[in-house]
Length: 114
Image 1 (cartoon, helix red, strand yellow):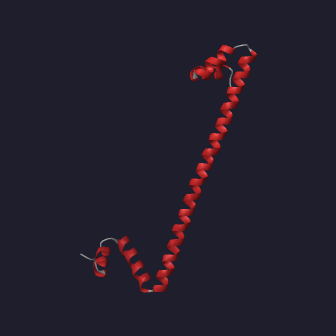
Image 2 (tube, rainbow, N blue to C red):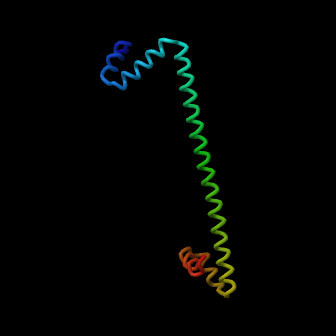
Image 3 (cartoon, rainbow, N blue to C red):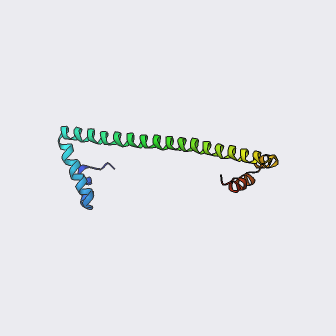
């Protein structure tokens, strides 16, 4: 069953917000120029929102990439410093063990306050 303009008006009367929206749309549709202006504004708002969302997503991804790179650099620096400290002390066995055992590596990083 196809709804008529009268059916929509009756439905709108049951809800004040819906009635208000219906009245605005009714007025806009009565004037073709205003309707086209309204549609153009709505399209511009949608385009702007999509552009902002896209830019936000790109910014978040760029931030994550930078964070990963900085984290990797810091991690490599800490491990290199640990290797140098262990090497100075002649603890080569600890270097090998730390390379194979992540928990032991963390223990050594704490031991050397790295």
